[in-house]
Image (tube, rainbow, N blue to C red; front, top):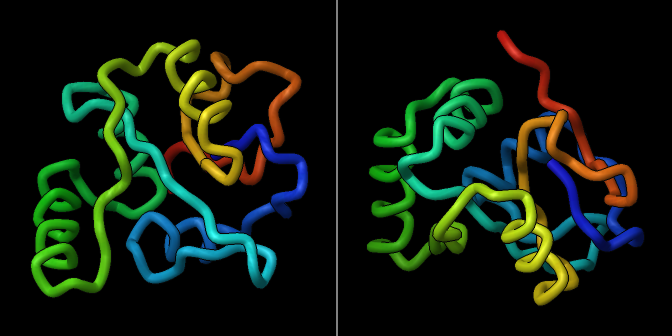
Length: 120
């Protein structure tokens, strides 16, 4: 999980889970953040939700639909592609944006907030 904003502090695993469950919208006390999601068809999205939350994409879609219906939250903005260039373009347009991608595709100059290990 990473950002282009160097003011964002590292995330704990529990904080990362709270963000991606819509239970928290801020980091570092006051910075309101925006999440982006990879396309529903992306295998990286499936792996990410499985590793971070132990959930499938369809389970998370249902979860977000319930939050949106109750007015308690809205799902992350979904990109058209999981290409790292598109993720970085979105982050450039959203200064408090947070994204995720496979570690091997993340460029060195970004602010890595947490690395989610496989199999946890």
